[in-house]
Length: 491
Image (tube, rainbow, N blue to C red; front, top):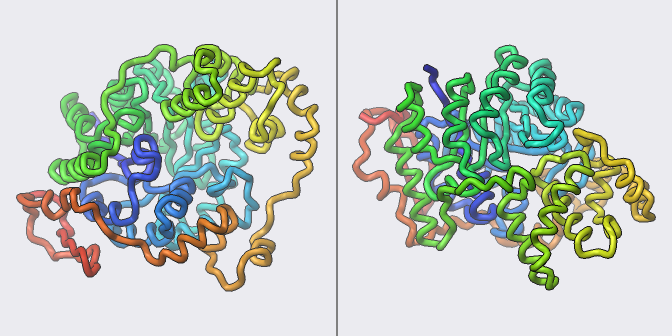
């Protein structure tokens, strides 16, 4: 049996899946960060450009400051940034110089591990992004094989992508990312060996959501097949549309003979912290999900499904929901089977809605769908249906979008934006409304006020003993001081 490592996703993907990426501000992250640092996680799925934008928009907090403070609070666990490569916050393609500056500043501020996730599996874009991230000084780069179910996404397809990633000198690890939670144990039994057979020793990880209740068993199968790391979440931020519960996965892995080198008691402290926060602030708690066979067909995740219901209600077409879901399957096939990961679910569902409530299909087409067919998001896995492509590209709006100027260089942005601002502020102002960045700047340093109803971490740590070691100050502020020992192992 194997030693299985864990990557925790609570702060980024768990927060995004269950709390809309708004549930955690800088203070809440810093309060639990020193404990997360000592659990024994291989890495922490920490942020993305979406989360950085939400820090500004929702909390008026500087996301760069958040990264710096978190790295200081947990210096021993790599912080991970996940991105689609050549875009930042906005879904508009950015100039390569701009993206190089993004990665440079992320590394300087303390992010050392990166996931390159191109939703179209455009390997040229993946290789270029990995090269830029390596040039910035990243210590670990993970290539994403984004899993879906379609007529073209078979084992051979993923094995071919894995071989290309293994040949890339700037990719250190690969992971199967299953955003829809579609990977069954049976499919894992063929997919994982096919991928590992092409990786030539490159380590493989697995990330799968609990949307229809599959990963609990799939993870155990993956561990038996040679996957080295599994991605999990803690407490209230596990389950539901998030990832599997860390404590349950650890128990199950050990039960079947694998070893997992984590501190169980500190893992419990982390889970209790998020449970307490959910209870105190009325935040959703992830829980078990029933299997939904229809999800395998339409692959519309919970958040997008809720939005679709609301839109139909507002338009007075709530009785057309089933028809829209049927149309989602058809539109996705016509567009070349895009993987239903942001931003493609929004595109496909919006187009399906237009097709159902309009007088004819593709009578109305959104700009993102036009850009998709123009190739702005990369090459589709399968060709777009020729008749649909002709219908979309024959529109005057398609000609306007095709004639858009290339993205501005950093030098051009410096001429347009206020003089004397930092590179980090420039990156935010180039991709976000000015009034939102202005509000962040006016708010000053991150406010570190904690909800008094959330049980303090120091209280949660009562009764835990660690072997004697030199104390390490990990966070020092006027209102909060926490010391833990360098040796995280319990006595």
